[in-house]
Length: 123
Length: 493
Image: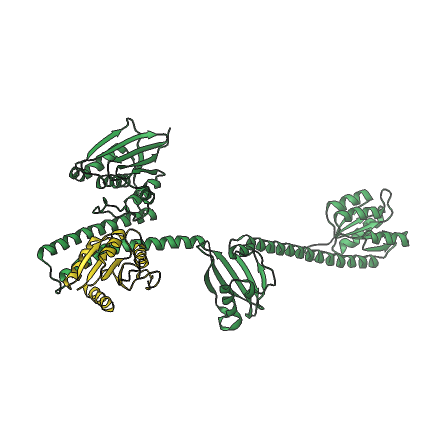
C-alpha cells in the first residue's frame, strides 16, 4: 500500500493506470500537466511518481523530473515513454534524465505492477 | 601516277624549246601547260597549283626568278626548276635562295631533262607527304589541347570537390570545390594527404595503402565538417588503376550534402511526431481493453461501457488523423486530381455551413454572413476549397463559447478575394498563434481540454490555400475570439 502520483496529459491513460494500481491496493493521485504535477508531488509527498515524457511539449516530462530532483525530492520516478524506442532513441537514466525506470506505452498491467513494486521495495 | 597525272608548267619565251619539252613530257604521260612569257607564267602558275614548274631565267618581260618567287608565294609546294643558258654562280645561289629545287643548264638532252623532272617528282611527293603529316599532327595537337582544356574546365566548374592522391599518398590534383566543401583555407600539390585531410578521409585512404585486396573497392562516408548541420559532406574514394591494373592512386569526390541532411532531419522529426500522435490513442485503447480483459482487475459493467465508449472516441480521432495525414501526403505528392471549376465563394461557404448545421445548433451559435455583391468567381477544386472552409468553420464552432457568434465576410480587397471568419471563442495567446500552423500543434489551456482534433486541420488549410498562391492570416485575442482571413488571388481584367 503506497501513495502513487500519475502525471500524464492523457485522461484515458490516467484512468487505466489508476485502476490497475488501485486494484493492487495502492492509492492514486493524478495531475494532467507539469505545473499541477509539481504541486501534487510537493504537497502530497507520494511514495512513487509515474511521469509521462511528452505532455505539452516533447520534453516536458524530462524537465519536470529535473525540477523535482532540484528540489532534493528523491522519490523514485517511473517514466512513461511512447515512441522513443521505435525511433531508436534509448534513454538511459542519468543526470539529464533523473528517473529510475522506464515503461513503454501501451502499458501491460502486469509489467506496470512489477515495475512499481520493485521500485517501492528498493525505497 | 596512273590516275593522277603529274602537272607540269613550262615557262619559256623560246618557242622551239617550249614545244619540244611539251612533246617530250606528254609522251612520258605528264600533263603539260605552257606559257610563252613571264606574265602568262605567273598567271597560270598562281591560278592553279602545279606539281612542277620549269622556268626560263631570261625572258623579255620578267626575270625567271621573279616568276618563281610569285608562284611560290601562292603555292609553296610547287617544285620549281630554273632553266638557263647563262648559268652563273650568283644566279644559282639566288635561285636556290628563292626556293628553286634545281637548276637546268641549257642546252640539255632529253635524257638529262627527264632525269631532272623525275627527281622533281620524287621531291614533290616528299613535300606533299610531309605537309600532310604536319597538318595531321597540328590538327591532333589542337584537338588534344582542346580536349585537355575542356576536361580542366569541367572539373574546375563542378560543385563536387575532386581530389587526386598518388600512390605515395601525396595530393597531386584538386579543384576549388575541395577547399569549399572541406572548409579549408589552404591546400597544396605535394601535401601529404594523411596530414592535411580530415581524419575520416585519411582513414579510408590509408586502407588502399595497407592491403592489396581492398584496392578495387570504393568507399563512402559522411562527415559533419561544421556542427549544427551547417556543413555536411559525403566523401567517395575510388582507386585509380594504371594501364596494367596496378594501383596508381585514389580519386576522392567530396560532395556537399548539407541541404539533403536538413531535409532528412525535418522528415525524421515529422515521422517521430506522427508516430507519437498515432501511438497515443492506440495506447489508451489498449490500456482500457487489457483492463476489461484482465481477470485480476474487477470492473463493473458501467465502467466497462464507459471504457469502451471512450475507446471508441479515441479510435474515431485516430481515423480522423489518418485521413488528415493521407490528405497532407496527397497535397505534398501532388497526386490529388484537381478538378478546376469556377467557384462562387459565398455559395461554397453556404453549403459548408449546411454540413455543420447540427454542430452550430448544439452550441446555439449565431452565424452572420455578409457577402459583397458582384464578387468574381475563383477557379479552384471544389473539394479543396470546401475542406478549407470546413476546417476553419469547425474550429470557429469547436472553440466558441455557447451562444456565441460567427461572422463571415467576403469582399474584394486589391487583387485578393478575401474571406474573413471571426468567432467569439476562446481565442489564442500570441505564442499559440505563432505555433498555429505547425503540424500537430494544438493550443492547450483550461478551455481546450475535452476538445478533440488532429492538430493537422490548419496545416491542411495553409497548404491548400498556398497551392493556389493565396494567403492565410490570423488575428486572435485570448478569451475574446479569433479572425481567420483567407486571401485568394484574382487576376483583374
